[in-house]
Image (cartoon, rainbow, N blue to C red):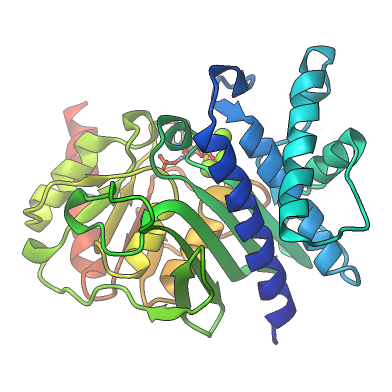
Length: 349
Ligand SMILES: Nc1ncnc2c1ncn2[C@@H]1O[C@H](COP(=O)(O)O)[C@@H](OP(=O)(O)O)[C@H]1O
Ligand SMILES: [Mg+2]
Ligand SMILES: [Mg+2]
Ligand SMILES: [Mg+2]
């Protein structure tokens, strides 16, 4: 099965969304930050990115049934108090489309923007095709001026078949050792994969792509690992116990968002550990694009027990332990270390 058309549409949508996010991040104002009911920050850029991706996919693929599972919805945006914000988002989306020259026949109204955002309410599942979108993954990183990603994937009959990860602040060269901040002009990566076709990366400013591969390191002493910047998102004490058990020497590289999957896919580090606190349920948009980018670059992504991730169950991933990512050589010893560290943690409680 070819996904050429879908890939071209997804790359266009994610690149335009990245442009919108860069514009907002440069000009970020405190008043751009809203508080969602779960208290996580959501900015005009999250909404703008979701509206833009939804609109572009539908314009580029007019003959396909459109279903999308996406993080944001318009509920808060439709309150009277948010009218000004909605107008700002609409202007942003129109400005980006105008700067690209696409669809010059149409300008979006605030209603069109709300509709585009709310196309993301699909439940996904094991049948048919569903786009999966995190319009800004790593909103906290985005607000800090650090890493974030626009993460877009396509599910076909419950399997991830395509992924695009735009990482506007990720340096084009390796961030091994934690050098995520580099000179302006050297940042902005787009990773993309189609099932069976490998993973490629190019600069957000160009389209000449290179094939990427995960690191082939087999000695844990030479390995380095990624984890969330936010301690609330992953138990840093557990990952540090696992790393110690494995014999990893380097300190963790803590960065936000699925930029971790992108960096791992090109060998900047070889392990990514994610252990949410009890009760947290992982959503598919936080992993779908990252998963295929790593898998097609030769990496392995499983839950903490070594089972493959199942993206066919709806908006959530059905797992409660955690997610681990590495290359095939290190996976057996990593799984062993994970099992032992979890047992020790449980028995110490
Ligand atoms: N308590 C929690 N535990 C685990 N993940 C959480 C969390 N609270 C929020 N997240 C998720 O972690 C994502 C960011 O991951 P990371 O820590 O790798 O940067 C967030 O994505 P958004 O920023 O899209 O909301 C959010 O979905
Ligand atoms: Mg969020
Ligand atoms: Mg996210
Ligand atoms: Mg998000």
